[in-house]
Image (tube, rainbow, N blue to C red):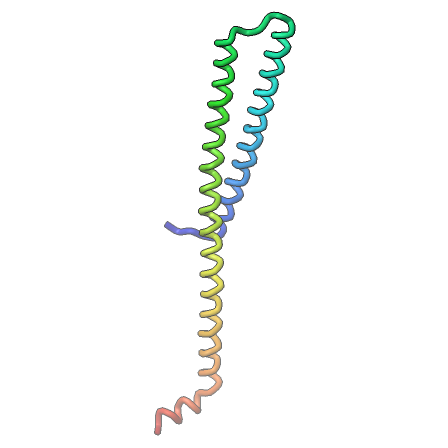
Amino acid sequence: MSCTIEKILTDAKTLLERLREHDAAAESLVDQSAALHRRVAAMREAGTALPDQEIESQIDRICEMGEVMRKAVQVDDDQFCKIQEKLAQLELENKELRELLSISSESLQVKKENPVHTASQGIK
């Protein structure tokens, strides 16, 4: 499995977008719940309240939707954290590899600049 920084960044952006969508959906559920409570209160004031069983059913449904949304957000959060950790690991590895490449290049450059010195050591 090949992990590139570009793929990880793309996945992170996708997860961030999904988190925003889940956040908007959760806000919508909160709004629906508030609207339901206002509706029930208004019906009670008017004397035409919904049966308690229907109210409980709707409240349970909203709570279930909220729980599903919380789980989805948690899964996305976990995945996002894993991607961030992998990205940090790859960035560190990339930095270390660049340092090694720099050291190797400097070493080759020194050898090219001092070919006589190396040759004279071989003769001794």
